[in-house]
Image (cartoon, rainbow, N blue to C red; front, side, top):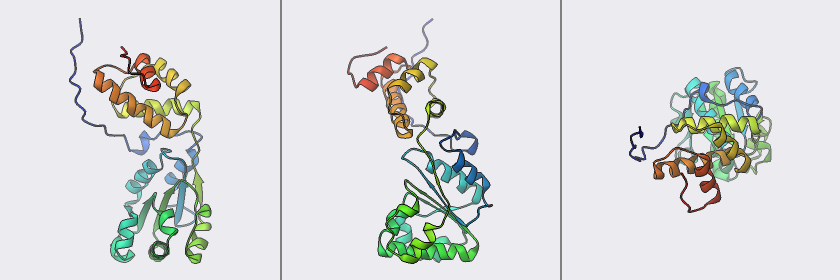
Length: 232
């Protein structure tokens, strides 16, 4: 019997963001351990660093749920005084904006003031960036001194076993069922990085949706080769 055809409705996807849904491996285990260790940090501030798609934002969300932290953006910090911006909050996430703020005079002053307010409150600050603060160009010497001494945990590119688990999670987040043959094929040909895994899963999701089909090796071959030929 032929299975009923599903309408190719693009309803988007909802990635799993809970701590239990995060794939842990050698490349990120140390960062996960630090997040789980809060509030028992040696300092009130921590930086997690790594390549695009490493899971930094996911860990920031996990920590926000655990700490009740608010996320502060570059625009919001430049637009308001830190005390007004924080309200009653005593925990803050800066995801991907701290390095850019620190590089400019006004941004560095605002960031330094935010750091001091949190320190006075006995609060915590989590920074997520591609590189550790010690490598940043920081306009304010006092801020450079503070940031240069904080713990900075680096997340590396994944190994093959981790990539297998990551692909399985990314496909599951999009409610796509795949075979081991598809995963093996992807691992032998895709960019072997967090970003590469995210991009190939997104491309396959779109291709499968457009065709109204499952994700197969043939479809993966067509997507990775960029071939217009139809695949079944």
